[in-house]
Image (cartoon, rainbow, N blue to C red; front, side, top):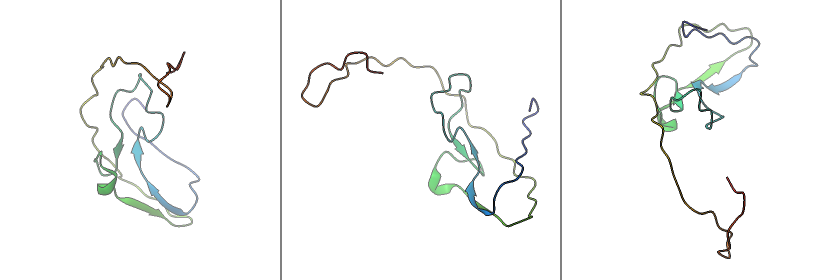
Length: 89
């Protein structure tokens, strides 16, 4: 919400990563890097959260990293044979 609070309901029992921007990396409206709980951009440092049937978990707060800056990248997309790939993105 507007205060940064979140709530998930009806999560099946299992083991999960908690984070932001875990998919949809091309979302230009949310310009922060993918971040895993407890506040790392490195998956190897992320904490796996185990949820058991009927369990309620609270106080999973973490801090976002610095906003990503806009960059332009230019180049040419080619097929394996070296010919230009028209309309590639």
